[in-house]
Amino acid sequence: MTTSIVFVIILIISIILHEVAHGYVADRLGDPTARLQGRLSLNPLVHIDWLGSVILPLFLVLSNASFILGWAKPVPFNPYNFKNPRWGGLIVALAGPLTNIVLAIIGSVVLNTIPLGIGGTLLFTGLVIVNIALAVFNLVPIPPLDGHHILFALIPDEYHHIKVWLRKYSFVILIVFVIYGWRFIAPIIDYVSGFLL
Image 1 (cartoon, one colour):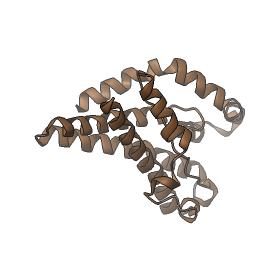
Image 2 (cartoon, helix red, strand yellow):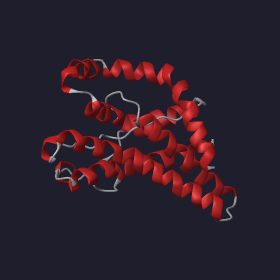
Image 3 (cartoon, one colour):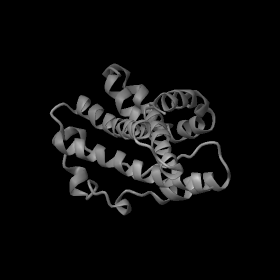
Image 4 (tube, one colour):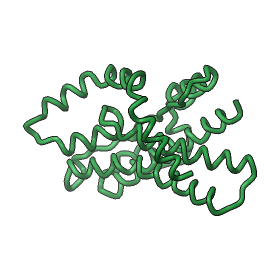
């Protein structure tokens, strides 16, 4: 139970940093939307989605689920404020998962270079596993996950109907993926986390 609670805390902090990264990069690329809405703050209250950031992770912990899932309020951005809306949106989308990868690498470096006690080992192991899981999960190309911005930037305009279809059925597709698709990304998460650990 203690381990799961630690993982939930790491999850919340990592999700917040993930979202702030989106907003910061969007701001640097010329879109102040997130900054004007106060979303560049590290204050968790401006990012937490009570269902996705607190209730669902705790429910999964208490039910002894094999994975912990969560999300925060998405940071808004307007791609039309970028010099190149298509590629600007892609860069902003990548900022979140890349932040998680950097956090995982930091955790790995600390684990492999500094002698830690049981508590420290648990903390930084959690940092690696949670952030790799967040990065991989968010790169899945289903709205509203970050991967859909990347996919949409790569899809030629003549296939616009694919984007419309994915947006229309995004909630259903995401639920189906969470239930049945986790098995496809779990090996990737395990492999990368194992490599870093």
